[in-house]
Length: 125
Ligand SMILES: [Zn+2]
Image (cartoon, rainbow, N blue to C red; front, side, top):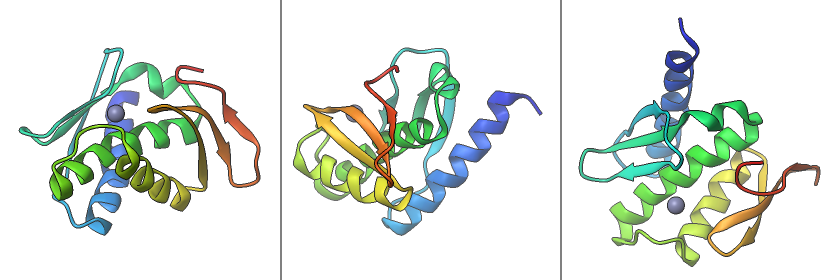
């Protein structure tokens, strides 16, 4: 099995776990050579950037959680920005994956594991 297919299956499993817990429909994941991830509410899928797969596991998970959180805030509150409700839900889900976020506006300035060890400095690190 090629690496992209492998990750699409892995991310889909993680996604199904999160969407089920948050009582929203299952989301399809498509890995693409794009710069930024995108949450497509109408067609119900996430375009996931290929470059993210070269990062640490926690960062890959964080990136997926960020996009899924857009679906949760959209389905439940019709909110599609990065304001407090998005941050709150994103942080709650990250916690289950033992990831801690330190914010700089919308995107994290840094990610930490539960023991306080820095995973990465900024987006793209
Ligand atoms: Zn976003």
